[in-house]
Image (tube, rainbow, N blue to C red):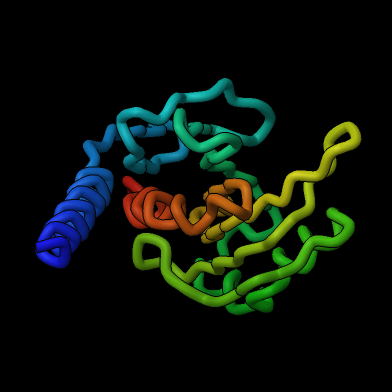
Length: 185
C-alpha cells in the first residue's frame, strides 16, 4: 500500500515539474524592433525593459532571477565599411573578443568560444565566467555574447546571470538570441 502511495506521489511531483517547465518554455514573447539599426528580437513578456546607456540600444531584465539580463549593442567600425560579414568574421579568431573581455576582469575564465550563425550570418559566440567585485563582495557572473558584423556595424547580443543560475537561464537566453533578425537584407 505504501509503495503505491509513494509511486503516485512521485508521479504527481514529476508531472508538476514537467508542467511548470513546459509553461516557461512556451512563455509568451514580446517583439522589440529598432528602426534605425534595422533589427528585431523577441523577449519574455514578463521581463522588464531597462534604461539604455551609451552604445546599448536595448536592455531587458528578468523579474525573477536576480541580476539576469540581456542587451543589444551596436558599434560602428568605419574602417570595416564595404567588407562583407564573412570577410570580417573570418579575420577574427573565434576567441578574440572572449580573450579581450577576460583580460579586463581579473580572474575571468573563457568557458567556450566558437563560430556560429546569427540570422544566417557568420557570427562568434563565447561564454565567460567573470568574478564581478562590488564593494567587499564578489558575485560570479556568466556572460554569453554573440557577435555578427553587418553593414559596417558590429551587433553584440549579451546575456548574463549569476553563475549559479546560468543553467536555468540558458534556455531563455537561447530563445532571445535565436529570435534576433536583421530587417533589411
